[in-house]
Image (cartoon, helix red, strand yellow):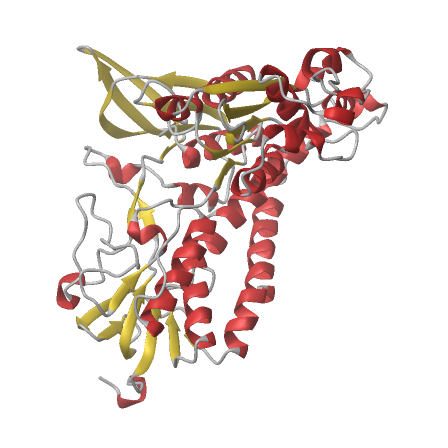
Length: 491
């Protein structure tokens, strides 16, 4: 070991510079700990370099193509949009580089005095307090926080090596003529939607009864209908994959159901069959860190692992694998690493979202989950009957509220369509604040807007509950929707 690569022990060592790791490092430093942050690749982790940032950039390009085809409806005469895939790839790289270079979180981390080691390669534990990286760094600390993220799940199927992950699909230098997407979760549907809009022929395969199985049933149904209308072939409950094999034009997937065999060919097959902890190279046994029964790092309510001085946060724990929860977990882990068991991880209202065409988003409980423990009412406002969606020619979708009948508080919000994510985020705030639907209906939101549909859904729910809404009931939107969804004014 080169002596130049041996660094003095720090108070806190954070492994991974994604959302969880970056926030953990900043929090530890803010609390006065000498903090080191080490990452296998570039700062930002999967979220910036391989996840939401590049995915959202590609999705934006896909949306621009879709919207360009609307221009003729508004008297704007242009030719058929044509994709320059090489330029799109360059734009994705530009965006990622810009995000990394101008990340306010990174600037705060540097200002707080955190030592950052980027592109260090895989880290592994040498003992309970020391890690060694592929580049030869030897880093020791009193407390360690594992934020190594996750990776795509590999399938034990013959020929699996012929398939691609969402990462390799996003890194393609040429647009494939056709694509099989295996897995109908959030990652799979985004890949399918993006490449379909860009011009690839897509077949989407889901082993379960429906795609987006963790979303509200109405959301899954609406997205499926829209996908099929857009030309995506959606196969649900298709059976089991037997093997993959190479063909002259790409790859073939062989599958079977109830003894009947079938196959399908495409230029590329993308497997998005789940997410596992990125811990295979960490040598967790040397640190005394145990996995849970799913293979993720086991943590308690303080984000401590089975080794009391080692904590974990983010996707590596297998909890809600979204950026906001990862940030919260990083904060909790770092606080407890420095101060001792001071705070517990609290349940919150998180917004899940898919940047598909159409978008979908959810906050809070699904209808099925809510019915298990609550007497509920539901209110659905369809986008083909609201003014802003009609103006913009974006009439596909709906806003759905799930409300507790006894308390009149919103339990969940589920949206499909234009600006779905923004609408659901406003609902998440209302749910977190414990707002009653009649209070939400009274908020004087701008008109005509997409977010206004949330208030209309709240007013509809209030009417079902026979609640007074007041002045909002007299608001005129100018079409039949008001008569149907706005409650009458009561004294």
